[in-house]
Image 1 (cartoon, rainbow, N blue to C red):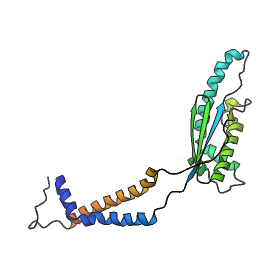
Image 2 (cartoon, helix red, strand yellow):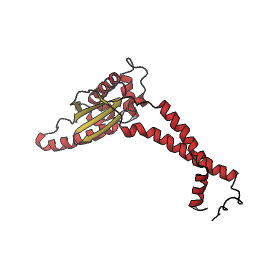
Image 3 (cartoon, rainbow, N blue to C red):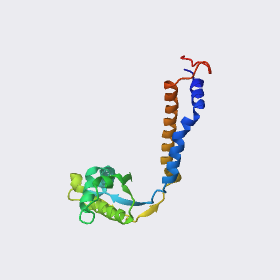
Image 4 (tube, one colour):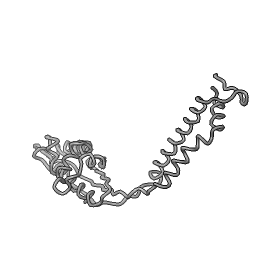
Length: 214
């Protein structure tokens, strides 16, 4: 069946194609709400251990190299469920309903050389500050619990920036994405309905051109 045949079917039953789109558009307009603001916190940590051995001048190169490994390791660690559970455990008394999965979903990390950066995004500024404080404490005091290599030489990371939440507004693209997806799905449903109608009730060949099967 040629493409123009499909187009002729859709044009002839345009009302069936547009009906789901109109219904969904009305629903979107009536239920649309501006997404609530979120709060982001950026924390930077300097990583590294003290030089060890007979010659600090010689071993200092390896200490710098080690600090880069620590930054990378902690960046990967902070995105794990184990780390998120440790944060939830630290806040259990004050926030018993805080789930580790919620904490994990709000954490992102990066590192450059010997600097570890942890990004936290959360909807509640007070709880975001509490989670950030627990993250800072876990990173600076419990590195040896995850990496035995730094046992006895902590702190392997030192907090550089105090965790202060900053409000971030959702972008226009983010606000329009959900309605656009809904309208697109509605259009697909409309097209499917029009083609199904034609399949169940094909055109009368006496009043229209027969549809080619090619």
